[in-house]
Length: 86
Image (cartoon, rainbow, N blue to C red):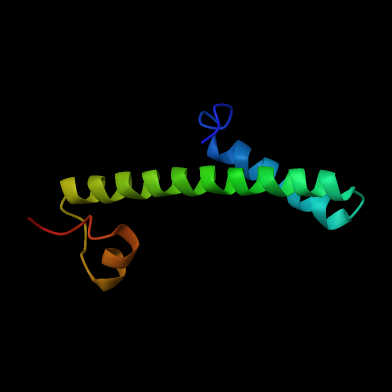
C-alpha cells in the first residue's frame, strides 16, 4: 500500500472514490488523465477492502469474546474460519 494511502480513513477513501467515478463518468478527461484516475481508484479500492477485512476480523473477535459469535458455513466463507471454536 502506498505511503500516502496507508493512513487514510475509510470515509475519506470512499469519498475520493466517488469523486473519481464521477470524473470518469463525465468523460471530460484525456485518456492519460482517465488512466491515472483509474489507477488511483484501484489503489483506493484495495485500501478500503483492507480496512473492511480488518474491521470484520475485529467484529468477529469481539463477538467471540462475548460469546455471541455464531459459526456457520456463511461465516466460515466470509471470515475464513476465524470463528471456529477451539
